Image: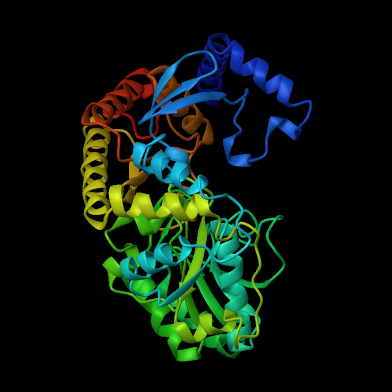
Length: 434
């Protein structure tokens, strides 16, 4: 494998992509006049320019040039229902008929709150926000005030929203809280550092599976160590389940048997609308009770009727606990097929993850933290992305794969076949190829 050969292959992929997507290119160039890089959401950009998506239906997408794709990214986990599910559409239409901005408590928010608390038993009470980012910010704020402490333990590779991202240290756009960044999946270091700084620590914030950094599952011993250590020093354990709540009938933490003090939610639970929520122990959430609490929490659209209606319809009619379990099983079976294929073909490529979420990595051996992904050549991820597009599969440039309810078995077969053809075409460029 040579750098020049990979560069040449990628240049060819760029050229084919550009020639095939003149309308998307035109849209990009026009929009760049009014938005920096034609972009309001960084994750959606990729070189030489991103596709403009014109339409979605079920588990299919069409771009501005009329190409059809099987959707294997599903709005980065928010689109579990696919596109324009009738049940969601009808619920939103019905809600709009009674008024959109009601300027008060409404008839819809309480039933969704009850449903979420019943589904995720660690959540005794909750409050709604408009995003997972807001949910995590408010959960941390609650922990700071409840404990009277200032330090927050987070983990390298963690992503908790647009202003809460971490590499070896907080990213430049991360809010300036007092963070202690520890290695993920290292139970011993976590115990030692939490014990050392215990009197200062308000919260331990963690994803049970790191999503944005590559679908890296947290080991049971690591997560249990966080629970035990947080309890011992009097800190609150906050599980970010914005992504992972979809991975089991009652969320990933519940499946693992670990009860957090606070939990944050987002993505799919709003039925495809803007959504976030944070909740947990009633004594902590009492801080926000306007009758007796000390913390205000505002947000014009926190309880907006569209999200409240869509979320309730989605969780009761489509993504029931049984449906969540079944989708997770489909994902496990797909990931097993893909990993078996990579082993059979003799390449250092694997798919990590749990349930209906997974990520492709060009590396051998166990992946327990972002450090294990350091050897990966990012250009191979780009080659995979453009190859999948050429095969009619829309996914993420970082190799992230998300299953949705409308995906058919034929779609999954198509994805597996596309990985097989990718290995066949680029075998000489892949690590560990034999």
